Image 1 (cartoon, one colour):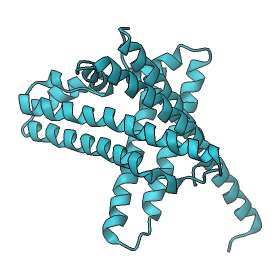
Image 2 (cartoon, helix red, strand yellow; image 1 turned 180 degrees about the vertical axis):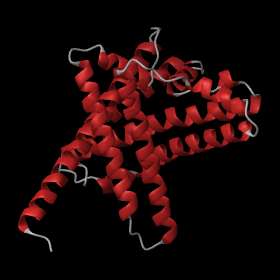
Image 3 (cartoon, rainbow, N blue to C red; image 1 turned 90 degrees about the vertical axis):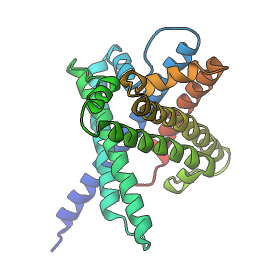
Length: 263
């Protein structure tokens, strides 16, 4: 039997959990803002990496940077736990859609946990290996070419899903938006941000597929390599600047989501 004291403790824990998850959205906003700013600086000819590792290192070098990184890790772990709970509790009547949502939630949880691991590794000064090393290891294993291609297709599909979600405004159903111009502004930020992030992620997937086709591990890479690949296209500087600005806007959207996300 549930007592009033037990119910109060459960409600208190739920409030703490939601608070940590909302902090996680703030974390995502900060990280994407830093990555976008680095991408814009690269479009102007500056040297540097525009990925999660670089963003975490930038944060570490700020006053109280180590404390901030621990807060970042805690928020991201809370976000991952929230996504796992969403996957477990998903009750869509359509079985295919239900399992589709579950896969999406669990994939998002893994992404959050990976980013939390990057924050912790930065604090411990134990930077992880690059994506190109992983690609080389995969290509050296039996069937590694097909596995690398599969990873590339999945990553590219995730990028396309981001783009579609941006254009269709599919993220709106997860928000309790304010009325008026504030709500419309948040939606506009979401559209631009999702499309920009989708482009960057999709290009990352294409690089993995290209590496599997050419058997060249150096062709594969993470977000930083994807952004540099965009810079090498015709009008690449302009494209990279736009994507970088879009990532900053996505970061601002994440900050708004911290306030208006349905939990």
